[in-house]
Image (cartoon, rainbow, N blue to C red):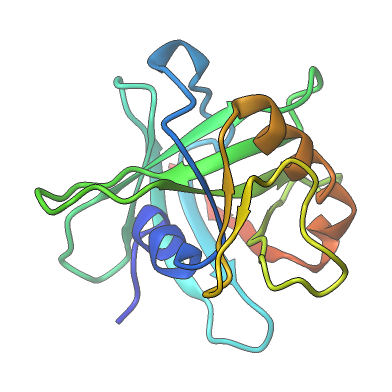
Length: 170
């Protein structure tokens, strides 16, 4: 089953980099212009997403052709140029709230976007600033500053990340 951007992020983030709710509504930015996008991973079949910016400051998405609840994704800038962002899926559940999971989202030179899903598997060491390495591969950050420094360190990996490419403007 294909998922909106927010749900996809939440699905893929299980077991990665987590922290508290570090961002407020004042931190939110909407780096993705509204439109229809193709979300591609390595060799996986791409998903087609319709993305729009909500009045609530979040970026909303649905999978084209599927009837699922729209997902909400938050973005907060990590640099002055507006090229790097901390991104997280908004949890829409009455169940027990898990820590917020984060990824690096970036605007590429060609106008496309890329997403790096960080891992905490000890390969190459654990990220600086992570307070805890859990046996199941989750790194927890207790401060926004530590999380943001670690996310910025992933910027060179954006070219190998998942891509989000504009297919059609609204």
